Length: 330
Ligand SMILES: Cc1cc2nc3c(=O)[nH]c(=O)nc-3n(C[C@H](O)[C@H](O)[C@H](O)COP(=O)(O)OP(=O)(O)OC[C@H]3O[C@@H](n4cnc5c(N)ncnc54)[C@H](O)[C@@H]3O)c2cc1C
Image 1 (cartoon, helix red, strand yellow):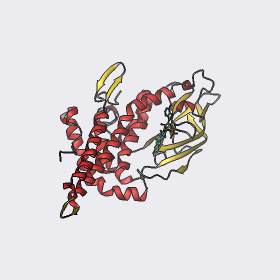
Image 2 (cartoon, rainbow, N blue to C red; image 1 turned 135 degrees about the vertical axis):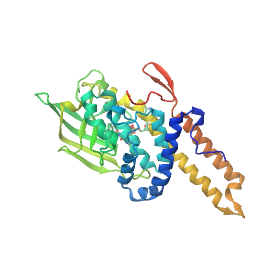
Image 3 (cartoon, rainbow, N blue to C red; image 1 turned 90 degrees about the vertical axis):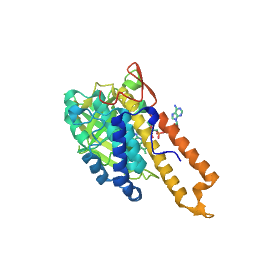
Image 4 (cartoon, rainbow, N blue to C red; image 1 turned 30 degrees about the horizontal axis):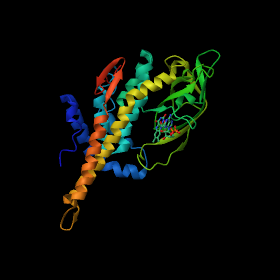
């Protein structure tokens, strides 16, 4: 069988991208893959893997150099997420969620806000989660009900409400919280603002963790906000810009989640190919049987097609670019 482990020579990876991919692949296969089954069985966040990613500067990939990051382009970040997810889906999500939830600060944070929060996130000293979804607002985030009411003196907001399905909120130090600040805005998407909230703030609680079928080491949390007081200095952008910040974040973070799915598919293909080579029936490996070969070929074709669609053709700020070369270093 062809080298099914080679994501995308056809994308014309640069030498740096190939080296990075190969280094992450080696690390993931040697240090993370042996932990994967136990992480899934235990259903607990793998703090040791988080420390490994921090020590190896993998958290630094999507962050600008001026904040201690590496300033890697988005395709490179996707390659890293794919290789980690190929070994362990939970572990791949650690990098993907850190990138996703840091993006609102990268895209809309002031210089002061970026200097305050990004160095710890790039170093992996602190984790961050992205809290948009609510019980009645999933695909339709403009329908959020969580409120952020500004104090009469204007120096802080008080947040009340709840969130659901928030990855890593129970292990994060920081949350990006989207809440309604302008309930009477004419256009529903102008109702929202985005805030950076410290999870240690009184009134914040994790009320429930989801019981999941897979990616079980990645906690998915239900949250309550009961009079959570947040400094006005923690608001990202202007009031009413929250929806736009969320959408700009998704434009750049969705390829990472797609890369995670490709990594999971590749990992399943690796296991199937190895098993087909080892398992003997009728005196020969089952991989020599035509019908089994057809199944493996279908898996390889599906995985390659999915990988080819990850970087895609993007339109960004008026320019059409291939391979997500703009990265997140805005
Ligand atoms: C494991 C996991 C982790 C998550 N992590 C996070 C996180 O970190 N942060 C966060 O904010 N959210 C997170 N989410 C929430 C996720 O973003 C939502 O599940 C998603 O937005 C869909 O919302 P919903 O589940 O309420 O589905 P619904 O919006 O209720 O949709 C139900 C079905 O209707 C379909 N549908 C909805 N609208 C349309 C339409 N206009 N046209 C056609 N079909 C439509 C949907 O495709 C879906 O099949 C997570 C979810 C999961 C499962």
